[in-house]
Amino acid sequence: MVVFAIVAGMGMAAGGVLSHSLPRDYYSRVIMEVKADSSGPLRLDETSGGLPHPPASQFQVIQSKEILYPVIDDLKLVETWSSQEGGHLLPKEEAYSRLLGQLKLSQIRNTDLMEIGVFSTDRTEAANIANAIALVFQKVQSEDQRKVHDATLAQLRKEVDALRKTAVTAAPEDADKAKSALEAAERRLSTQTVELKMTVVPAKIWEKAEPAVYPAKPYVGRIMALATAAGVVLGFVAAGLFLRSSRRD
Image 1: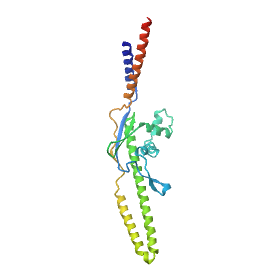
Image 2 (image 1 turned 60 degrees about the vertical axis):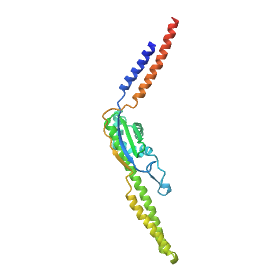
Image 3 (image 1 turned 120 degrees about the vertical axis):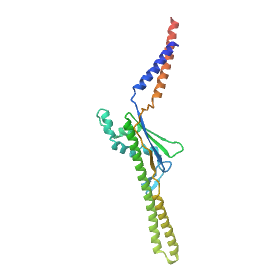
C-alpha cells in the first residue's frame, strides 16, 4: 500500500507540474441580444425568387467563413500567428481552423442573450477577436434583414403595379372590383413599409469584451484528473509487482 500511495502521489504531482507548465489561456466574451428568428438570421434564397429560406442556427453563422474570414483579415491574424510560428505564412484556412478552436459559444438560458467567448494566450487578442466577431455578425445580420425587407417590398410593389394595369384595362363592369383590389394592395404596401422601418436591429451588443485580468485554464481539471487516474493505475501495477516479488522472496 505504501508503494501504491507513493506512485499515485507522483502521478498527481506530475499533473500539477504539467498544468502549471501549459500556456496560460485568457478568456474574453461579448454578450449579444439576438432579436431575429430564434433559429437564426433570415437569408435570401436566389433560387426561390429572392424569398427567405429556413435560417441556419446563430452558432453555425458565427462559425462560418462569412463571419470569421473578415475577422481574420481585419485583425491581421494570419500575419500575427505566422510570426508566432517562426515566420512561416499560415494559409487562411489553417488560421480559420485555429480560430474555430478558440471559440466558445453559448446561449444564456431563457433569454435572447448569446455569449461569444474567445480563448487566447494573449489577453488583448482574446478581447479583440470577440469584439470583432460580434461587430461582423451584427453587420451581416443587419444586411440580411435589409435584403429580406427589400425583397418583401419589391414583391408588394410588383403586385401593386400589376393591379394598377388591371384597373386601367378593366371592363366597366369590373372597374370597381379592380379599383378596390388596387387600393387594398396599396394599403398593404404602405403599412408594410412603415412596419419594416420600425423593425428592431436583429443583433445588439450588450456587453463588449475586455482583456481578461486572470488566466482561464479550461483543461487543467481534466489534466489533473487524467494524471491522478494514471497515478492510481501505476500504483496498482507497482503494488502488484511488489507483492509478487515479496512472495517469491
